[in-house]
Image (cartoon, rainbow, N blue to C red):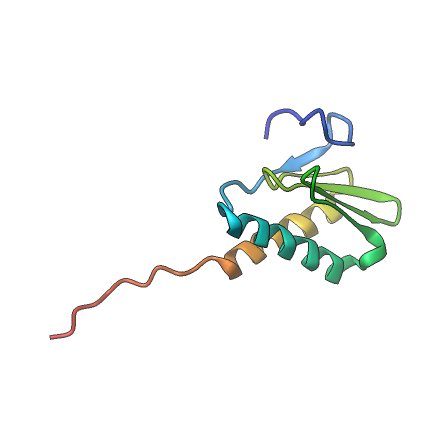
Length: 108
């Protein structure tokens, strides 16, 4: 992804990835809540700071800080392992919550 949003608390040059077009409307806020709950489950309540008005979640583990932008689902983190863990978890959550389109088969 190009550039870092200036409102984010991390510096340029930090590893980023994004997961776009997750959901829309009220489903988006539900997904945000579920992302926050998932990260708390993974890392503990003391490691996760949810900023719903600012639209980001900060995860701090062993002095490594990751920031999840809840508008774009970009993850910024200097620690590659932490970055991958959070990115993969968000992608898996999205897959788990996305309805599957099952084709209709006409039976005659």
